[in-house]
Image 1 (cartoon, rainbow, N blue to C red):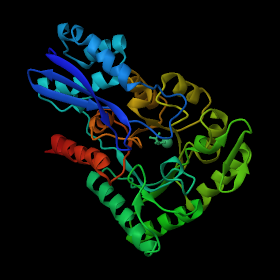
Image 2: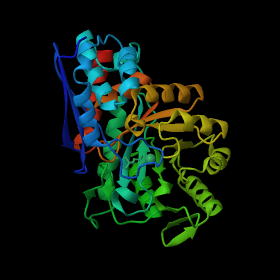
Image 3: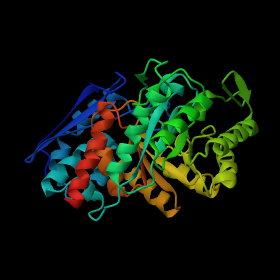
Length: 376
Ligand code: PGA
Ligand code: ZN
């Protein structure tokens, strides 16, 4: 496949901040890709500057036309030289069109297992201010894609009834409800909503603990309290027991591998201890997590490391370490739905994606189309 033209444009993400859209033109047509961003980012993420990316793309616009892209390996070779996830994604779409296959088949032609959809029901933390924990999540352990989506939607709608009209319902940044309630109240209403629809569903939470951790004082400051590390571990342990939580993401700040390991020791047999800010889709950091026996599941966000190559390697390692791999949206999304193909192609066991708001629903809808592509 030869590229006829490449260019880039500054566009807006779902939070109204600027990001990049790359446009690749081939004989098969025009292919676009854009990059999401986060609000509660890990300090280990790779950041890119939109203006610099646009300049970079102008600079390589002649060179890219001389290359013949025939495989993911060719795209990765180019990425290793020019370091741009946005270009890799657009090239993947163009190459898939050239081969007349969906994007996920470029990664694994035989992929067929759908990830469990983990959806945000109530938002907080940096995404909505209250409650202080960032994401109250639900999921159903089934391989029936439609059932998972339906259950998550049912719970989200039922929350309105459980809260009985006393609240103004608005969206947080990721298609969860933004409500002025406490952490315990959020778990309680979620539990009630799940019970009321009578389906077998599990609850989880992304604590995003770095967002309220005071590094100098080494304290977790929230809920009008200050907790030291042991107190934070005990509080989280208490919540896992009390609400039978099956998923805990970033319960401690992003450098505390040992604290994660303590929670894994206590609950690893019945609760996913998930690294996100901790692991940051970084090969170096997932190796440390493994040495420290810190987690049993990890978030995968390609834009967090801004590399297709490292995302694939990270996923390979996570699989080798027997971690559950959770491909994930960001709080500042675009309507690009390529992560649905990436997550499905990599065989990720879970997909953290909300079932509401356009930029999220586009990814859910892409999964529904992938189901058609796989099963007809
Ligand atoms: P972010 O948060 O996209 O705002 O960084 C998402 C998460 O922490 O999972
Ligand atoms: Zn997170």
